[in-house]
Length: 356
Image (cartoon, rainbow, N blue to C red; front, side):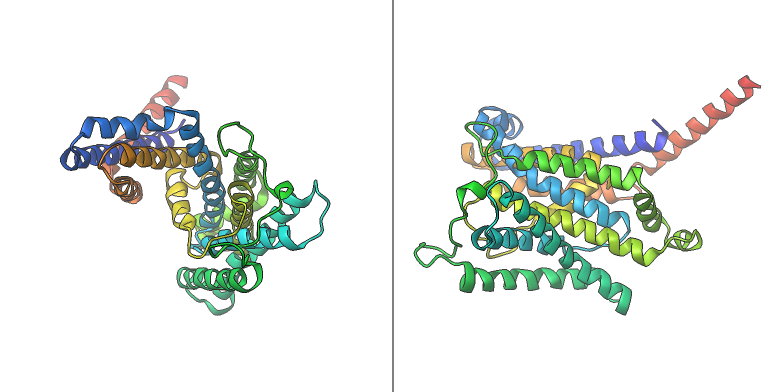
């Protein structure tokens, strides 16, 4: 392991440690039972099968969104339309499940794949606008999310809504189309395996294929990519399409695995969560499941803590913010990084002289 990777790991561990330490200090000040609150935060998810199941359930959509945005961000395109792709993916999966006559064994997979296809179109729009009009991807992608949410609300209210239900929800999704639970006593479903397969696919794509290499080179130095003969526009568009496809699949899997009706009337926030995940994973899809597990574990622990004590779950939002601030701060531990690089260089030079 080279010094750069060692430094990245060290900085990540310290960022997480500092964030948790500050969170603990806030708990000590705000709580009447600080020790109990901290114990619930750290060990609450392990106290029952159901609680640990909640961790895995929350982890599944985070893997999809983390992998999707890792691929998009690897091309240095700050496209945030994945939030809309996820939302539309759930809507499309529901619509197909309720209206398409598909053979029983194929139904869930067709729903999920079509959710991915439509999801990819959402992230493609800001990418195409950037290519054709040089518009700001950040702004256009955020606007796409609003468009998708309001479009989904229209479809839900006027096409899919069950008038007999006591809330704004769709007709019930047939049981044979839903993704089955794989662990009794929990809602952990088959989507877990799909998510892990997607993470592996993302890693292979970015680090073992030509197009993945071109995506990473384009993201790291677009001028070098152009001079190397890489079609930057094509590579950028492909990265956004693949990322949106994965987001859409995530939305389809989430709706079929965790719900029996579509009821999403506002933004779910998974696009923002994806930024946290990809920051922790350093844009490497192979690390995304671990980052997703960590975040899901903290959030489940925070829920347990708020139930058992008077500490609100927002304390973990504070921790998330501190982690992001420290990880993206270029000067955080920069002096130590320079020392590590210099030490490794001296060691290499010494070894070379001995070899002579």
